[in-house]
Length: 131
Length: 237
Image (cartoon, rainbow over all chains, first blue to last red; front, side, top):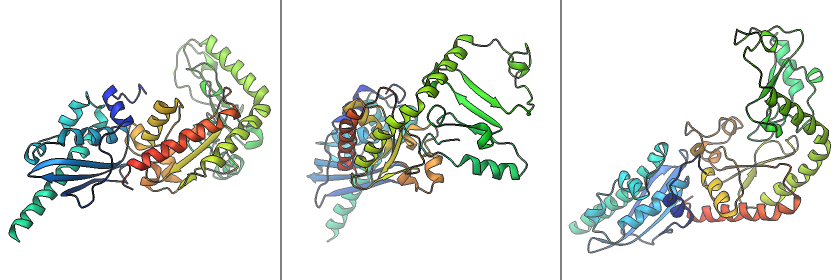
């Protein structure tokens, strides 16, 4: 696998991804990517008192797309939504001991999916306040 | 290409040659994937130029050959010392040339027997792998290289198939997925045969060699089946 150039950590998360699955009636949901491009991610979050208590993902994509999805769920779980909102694609790549340069767009997606789910949560929360 | 390395299809070379010659053009065929696997007759097939690669015939790497129809005159690409009849100057790599010649001789001697043996393994693989839900053969069902089986699977991506097959089952496979290419574009071959981008991403190529045995089929099939199941379990599609 040397020619793909994945770190040991990427391979570990690819082989044993954490937090795979879906959450029914999630407090926040994000979907990014497109199967035409070869990457599609769905992120589900459960939030209690602004803390992300549960997070799940489903990903169609290459090894690093799966590994970054797994890593971003680990980084976000247990965090305040405002803290989790600061997680960037570089944070995800750094935690995985780096990604091959051309794979950086995949980790971009994992962080984007999380941000989309947080945004969805905040939008729903605002809507509920107004009721 | 005489035979396509990604989908295994052996092309109707004689027919193509007729079309090319009707237009008054020369016909140059890349036989890298086909040489040593299927009989090639440059005269009967109407081939003017034929490219061959050594390592694809189990010969040494870094050497190839170009057949030139005797009546054709080519311009040299490297002028200088005049080696290779003035066409490609530079000292010849004699060891590699001898190695390629020997590899070609062995491939030719064993081709009939080896093709028959590999076809049996290939057909068993195809039969079993197509039992997986939403799996499809790519390339021609019968006019294909004897050692080549290629597929696509809905809802999953090829690089992760390759990675999983290697890490979990120690089986080396290939894919036309965008993620393994330098351009991040899916295989132009798979797009050219009419697959959509999202379909072309989930491709798998299995090629067999001398060391493969029919007894390995169940383990390979199990590896592919479990890989597809695992990745579909992760996929939102």
